[in-house]
Image 1 (cartoon, rainbow, N blue to C red):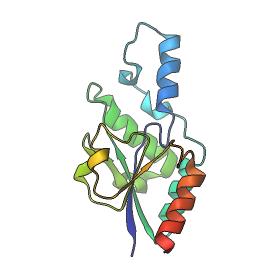
Image 2: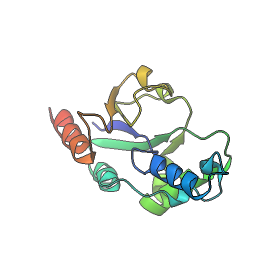
Image 3: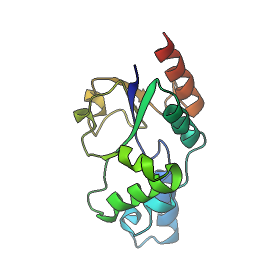
Length: 152
């Protein structure tokens, strides 16, 4: 049996906040740097994130998807996130990209997200893995938890 795992994108598998803050410093006149063409494509992966996703792809116990909320003020966001996924995980994984502002609409065993509320994470019916929290500070902790929890 494979377990559906949804994985948030911004600040869970790539450094959104860091890029946002750097862009503000470089050009304070731009209030929403994420609205600039190419912003999402240039995001830097978080250490261990892509390796963890590739591990899940290769492990028949998991059925991973990217579940990311859009920046609705930026129509380039949708395309930028899609391009980033292709660049980092390949064209085939783009079939596993879900862009939704409401994350609890989907059914699955796990949701890995840096936020525990705000986009429906608090109403997700599966288990929320709060990335960056004390319990799950990095991708090693997430992988260990997933490996142990589905092996039971």
